[in-house]
Length: 166
Image 1 (cartoon, rainbow, N blue to C red):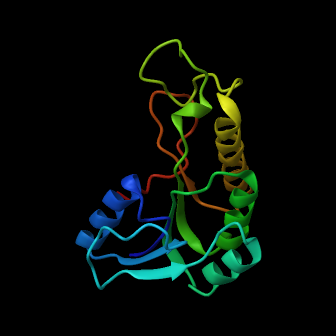
Image 2: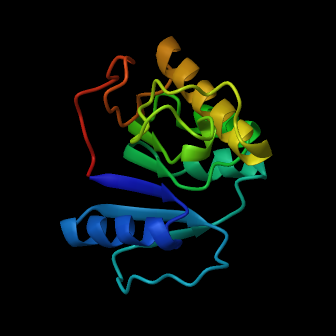
């Protein structure tokens, strides 16, 4: 499986990187190169870049050709989400976005929170931007532009695909 991780060297994404290396994926990491890679493997391709430079980011991803999956660990702004949608439209089998529990209202009605929990008062700018990124990815999926993957608990949203990556 040809997999791209946008990020790949942080705390959470290192565990994913390690799992995909162990599984034998053709793994590509796209990041700024500021955090040393914590997975020792000569099978990983690392592409250095800054996703906030949308034109270059999109060109670099286009140069990769078709991808089975993309795991986006470092999308923090709606402009980055829009760029990722443009870069991946029609070229990926599945797109996984790492959001944040902060998109949900504080002091939820019950725990664990499900995806149908209230989101009308995100906690701060970070949460509001993550929530808007989610909306953009869901809108792209609804248009058929991106096979967006989400994890669904007891909520009422329809499951978008039966395929899973991990």
